[in-house]
Image 1 (cartoon, helix red, strand yellow):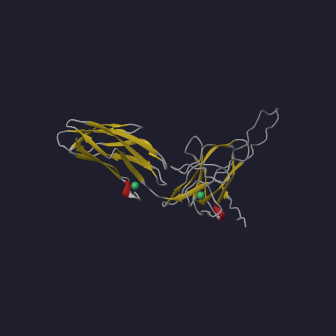
Image 2 (cartoon, protein in one colour):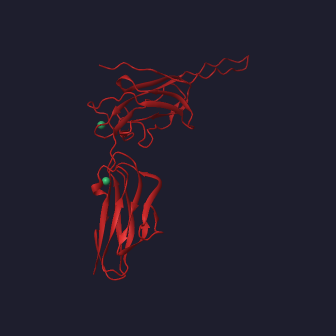
Image 3 (cartoon, helix red, strand yellow):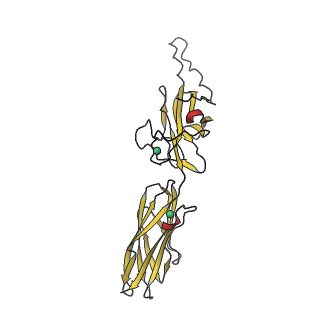
Amino acid sequence: MRAAMIRTRALVAVAPLVLLPALGPVADAPEPVSISGTTWFDANFDGIRQDTEGELWKLPVRVERADSPDVVATGETGVGGRYEFTDLPPGRYKVIIRGASERGPTRQDVGDDRTDSDIDQLYGQSNALDCTGGPCTVVDGGFAESHLDVGIEVDPATVKLPPQGRASVKVTVTNTGTRPWWASVYLPPQGVAVENPGGEGWVCNTVDPRRPNCSRFGEFLMPDETRHLWFDVVTVGAPSGTVDVSVLPGNDDNPANNHGLVHVTAR
Ligand SMILES: [Ca+2]
Ligand SMILES: [Ca+2]
């Protein structure tokens, strides 16, 4: 049975009528617009609501102006995971839906607009909505279990070098979890040196040669996203050594893949 609709009253007053010159025709007042949607639990994190995936209640929802942080309406989801804001003045808006700490927004806009999620994974925020000419778009929000898992692979994992030799190592960093990750990779060498790290947006710091590290300032590694970086491993006297390439994200749910060890042996 279809659940009853919950109406959430907008907190903003309807814009006043615009008065035209006394002798001219009087314009119609702009029709108020409404924004509605449904929130649901994306159990399989595919960004699509299947019939078996239930609604989420009591999630905070707010409407802001598209081009500013001005909040024009707030509420929460109710029966059936529904929310609706009515009597909004025509304008350009965005919708922000908050999940609980253990759940974050699922993949955005993956397919059929009737069954997918319309908010981004970082902030739970919709794209800008053009509500200037009548009813506005439905904004649905899917939320998935929060799961952080970043993994490292190194290639090659074994390097044979002569004294003063040099070889390039490729590092593959992949986010296989459901949460965006603010990425940092550490490249501490033992018995060898790490030089020239970088690539694909990584900004690397080699000031301390014992602890080179690379980060992606201002850019998250999103779920399913892979980024590579490269560095040179250089023998510096010792016949062998290692580089323990690692990611150290807080609360990684699968730390087993957080390291990629490069073995350097003498040729
Ligand atoms: Ca799903
Ligand atoms: Ca991991």
